[in-house]
Length: 213
Image 1 (cartoon, rainbow, N blue to C red):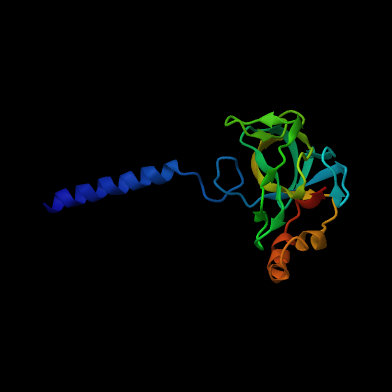
Image 2 (cartoon, one colour):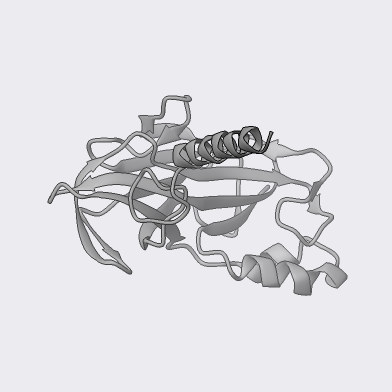
């Protein structure tokens, strides 16, 4: 019986080892990893109608390009190829007023401005990402409803090979060139919510707000 228990324990240990070997490494610098300590900042540019108050049909253009050489906390990395699991987030939502200190807690009719895609690539799951060859992304936002809006570009992950053949997983922070109209945004909510809301939005670098009349 004792030997039987030892054998079962050995099989159980082997089974756990096999499960762990199938999991990606938690933290390393390559695309196979779950997380990476490598980070970089990418400049995103808004242009077009960038007044604090615009009108239905006005166009806001967003463009960004992953540079040929990324400046990272692990040194400069010169691109070889962008891999298809690379992604970022972008959305533009709005409504009549804000009812919460967290971003996007809109009251009344909920509005969503879908991007009109110009330059992009498509992931296997259908999501849009950077163009795999040029590493560009470009789209247009053209509101069709009056309201108050927030546009945000969020970070994701860049899976790539460098020109020296080494593979990398990089965390991109996408910074926008536009003015941060915090006062305008905070005016859309009750004064009691403003301190908490400001503490949230002031930490964002890919953030922009505007009103459509």
